[in-house]
Length: 523
Image (cartoon, rainbow, N blue to C red; front, side, top):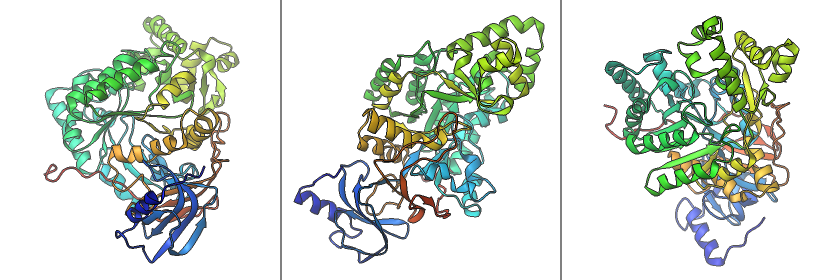
């Protein structure tokens, strides 16, 4: 685990790590000593990290710095706090319950920063969301996207149509408002109604506004399978948005979903590599699980039946003239997902049961069971539909980051970063330890423009994780998803110990991270 450096390299690293070149600081608040340090974007070495206030003041081998508190990290890995670019944790960071706002599932994996507002669900009033950290202290840092779904629903509603010129202008104005309040960029979930009712030119128009203000475009693709335009065409659409919208594009939770597209990862990777070779800034992120998480409606109900929202959808369920088409499309979507046995309901009356078991309990067929369950609620659902070969192929790409897509009742909330290390680094050796750490920290911070985050270096914010390379692993499972990860010993957020000796300290030192648009662009 330990890596030797030459004398010249040691001297250079030590000098570069000091707050003032050539001068070793006299004191620190915290010294993390003797661990294998992965600084983020550089080779590991055995050494120390010194922290004063909310910043790192020195990083290097054998720092001779007096500190108020010292952590012996011998045998441990010391890394930048992990950054999750795709979550659904807004309810945690804005909760009235102070203990919930610590975001324990993330801290116990070493995640110190997370993004919310993904899949097109981000707020328009970003300023209020970011300001809440001052009145409701949080355990982690967070930033937020504004959401195309939120904006389109506000302006157009749930109708399946294009915007008028006036409506498009209003949508663009709302994007600008959110960007000027600190949004990271524009997120979309083009698979979900009402965003699925849009055409590419509408998305490009809004993306261009976000791009002009220095934002990023983050997308759940229009199709990750073959529900509508198909996976390859959906990736081509994202590339077109990057090119014509003049905006960096991030494909969230990249995958080949369902039996008809399994094995397509190499072709998708080739498409993205060619676009990157053109000079387009395109990245992706991925969670390390073979099951996705969404809802029964999104999994099974065809888009035409969702036109107008839930009330209109339920009316179609009751219309005898539409039953044959509706049932045929639900049956086909079920097949795409791998059959009723591949769908695990994780909310409501049928929580913990597969759809085939629900049908058996209802003494009916799976399509009828699905319709009956949807009538009760749009329950969260886990769908086992990805091939390991695709997961590993995407994971190997240097432009694929780690995310959790943290959402209800899926083990990815509590275990994604820990599982990726334990399974894909230690067990299967798909990635090296450095690749895992970089793509969970430095790569994310650098691409999304998080100043002074994602690296262990002098002057950076002190977001640090200390974990045991022998025991760091997910304990969360599909059957028991709310189990905190094992192996994280200490976590520092903005210089404060959030986890010490494997336990939460109760300190909420997280901060809101607003994006700052170019000077004069919001006047």
